[in-house]
Amino acid sequence: MLNSDTSWTPHSAVVPRQLATASWATSPAVRRVMQGNTSRDTKPEIAVRSAVHALGMRYRVSVRPLRDLRRTADLVFRNARVAVFVDGCFWHGCPEHHAPPKANASYWATKVQSNRDRDKDTTQRLREKGWTVLRFWSHEEPLSVATQIANVVATNVRVGKPAARRIKSCQ
Image (cartoon, rainbow, N blue to C red; front, side, top):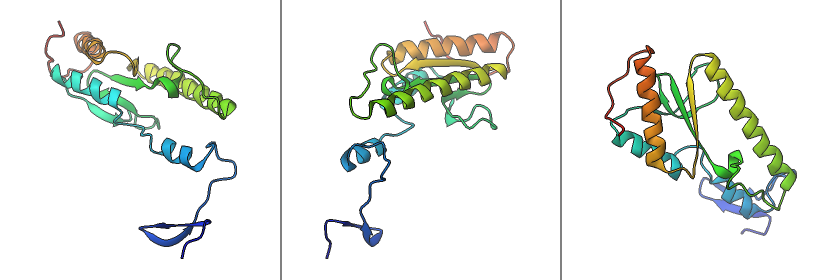
């Protein structure tokens, strides 16, 4: 028999229901919704990948450009040394679309700022190692993003960075 302090899960019998006392979530429902957000394979990211693939380009998905750097890029063109990030407007503070939440405003302001700081640090570290870093907002049109990516990858191949497979024309 379950009471209001316990819940049933398929992997175990009865588990106490808990919400961390210092949780960022304003309610258990909000916590579940936010935990459902994924860090990869978002709709904008998939749309960009699909457009890039349609141009005949091949890439790695959600990998570390540098093995010793614990940061993953959304698309990586190792041979051309290009790392692509598709940043979400909410999580990375898009100047055009970011609207800070009213609940836990100070938590989210700190969170978004730390994401921005980490983005700058990642970009700097990759550039220091000879990588070209491309950052796009999730609201940008995927075909336009794919064309920009293709142009940079083709340029990097032409200027003497390690050869990559030929790609279809971007025009």
